[in-house]
Image (cartoon, rainbow, N blue to C red):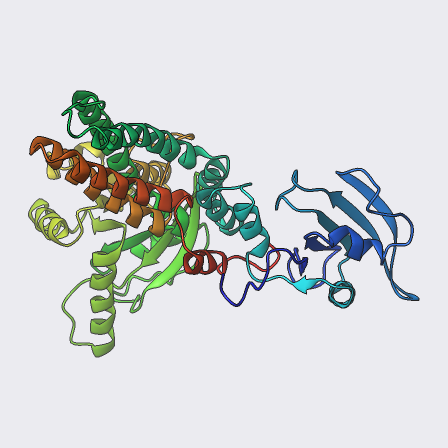
Length: 459
């Protein structure tokens, strides 16, 4: 283990709630001496003798000095979060009081915990696998219903269960193929090659689905970048203000009012959308406006979804078709929006823009604004993800799944080419290795230290 973690037998302490003044602060200890250390500061009861999962009220002391009146919660290993004895001290939320309690615990033999060390101990004690442990950090960082739902599903073992089933089936075939190596002189096959082909196909389909889910998982975790693009005075800033329900962007009849990008966050159906209002796209001799236009083009290239707006009164069908052609080359994920539709009848608009997949709206009258929101959500979800679907949100998992996919292809080619059993077994072992990397069945110390160092201290 790295030098940062000198021992896993000592007792650690940390503040488990946010820093700053609050009604309650919580100090957490975990380790073999947790009950002894807090018990020496809590004269009301002998905490080593009290039942697990109980609460105790009393004064916490450091020698003759009363630190605070607290509630002490007792959780005994192995039936605790870390698998060790845990004591949680709920004190009044003064930063001074919390620091005094932590200092006293250190004086009595505890060590200040490192980032993520409580969850790392839970992983090492087998209370969580690595995907579940990482989902704890995702749950803490969740800022939308979708991110919360995905993280909670993974903590409950949804992703792990899928990988575990795949790995167990593959291990069984691997054992049979390696058994064949012991009887190489008899030229026998214990592993049915037809069943193995079927298994590799099923695993490949599952892995492919998980890889495809990463795009959705990434936007659920980080938000969906929505670039509002169009010519000057197309109604982009008005749409931003309407979606946000506030006057965030300056709206004017003067073309070129928006000269830089404006970014705001909007939550729709539990998904975070990062709305980016951009400068109107046109040729300009104004140096500042030209810079804004260039930034608009960059946002169009990098956005998850582009909302391309055009004024239905001033744009022709040919101009819209030309814009669509350019969009398809730059960013094929877009929604085409005809603005200021309240000034024309539906019949007029249908005749003018025949055969085009458009959404007509009026930001001024809020016509079809809710329809636009739903289309934005549908564009992200694409109608394929349910509440219990396994979604890959972690780049480390995605990289390992790519390696799994490559290994499966090697196995498939090996069976087609009738390679010897020892080479086939090698390919299967490599596939098992990458599957094990995801859940932590195969790992190394540096990787663990890196993963858990991104957690908050008290978790």
